[in-house]
Image (cartoon, rainbow, N blue to C red; front, side, top):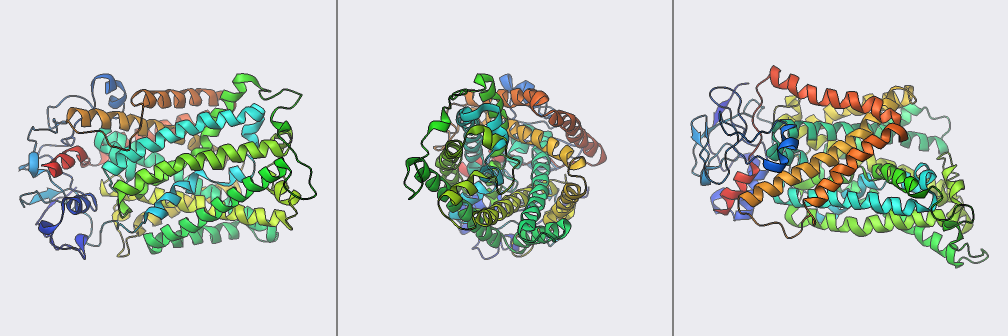
Length: 586
């Protein structure tokens, strides 16, 4: 891979519209440094890791799995507080930490991203705090909630409420770990780029490609589901036509501008919020007898005579918790917005905080209402059709005409919203991978409007493949993909918590304070979530055998592909985010 010298140019279009960097405030300088195609250095004698702080001691076993070792020789990780690392003849110590190929003193350096064409630009900060807050709901609040979560309820009965409390607690821990890290390091690629900085190249590669694959398969599934819902109104509409139309809509939202994406996702999620709140309100009105002409249903269905609240026992509660975890897949999308947020230090923690009451309202309250409206056996036996949804039953009992049609409209919006959010997250991960030379170079290109169109184009290939399989082989190849995606969610959560462990350890060693808005209970909570993910993976052997048949080969391919890539090309070391932060504080 060729490198070239980049001469400092503070009027570069990467900082278009802004004043001279020398006149910027500290925050603006950090914003400039964290936005863009970041400097990667090559050693004169082969590949080397970045000069970051690597996790050691109790974390050695985990971090070594991602290729990070505590050794410091041969260009390996140096202490971020003071050892000068020689990289291409440029000293990267103290205030001379490099960003955008320019040291703090103006020296020119070799940029490993110089192979990218001149039309490569940076992501733009155009997402408002309201948009980011709603983007957090894009993946987590999907069609499963509105269709009743029957498969989860079948495992635990009324005690499914406790199962969602357990799963939701794990999800909140992951969200707060994300918020703490990406608000500190608001970089392109979100938690994947942070993983690369603290777990090394392998950790960053696995984190980003795993999340990209997870998201792209979800997009394929959601656009196909949307096409199926359209057939409720247009029975003669071919499934492939509806799938293409739906895919075209979300691609348009993602390719024109990030602000258009943020606006579309805001209103998509707002409609889902209104629908969920309406469902809960109507359900409670039916339970308490507030609907004229309809007797109060009461809470008797939560503790029926045949089995009570725990018809399946504690084992059933734990099994349902394992499956409920996947309802929260997609909450990681919010981390992908860090590099495009107008104020990530404010917006990301606020979005994380908002997740608390949203999970309480949209999952716990909604599931409680679902269980109260009808016997849990009836909900568990539903085939997931629109007419069988508890939401439709609540509307029908309340006298709302065409309840099934209202429900269908909500499902279409929910599916499009989930697809929209997952496509956004996938493209940002692919863009960050391309900047690091771990994805096709075209994916690093960003249009003048801030949209990473190259990454969208590559993502579209993956979405098309997933949608095609879901259409022509829904019971075969596509189910295999879904099985792999199930495992991918667990991998994502484990990597996030492992990264947070290394993040906290490195900052403590550097004498930096813990963020005001942070994950409480670390590191115990981190290890608890990691242990839970491992236990869930083991339990899937009995609960969802396909996850094992697809997941184990997927894990092997994911890790081995990095080894293959590393042998095929010389990879630039990841950014030293901690050293950059230390330089800013000097």
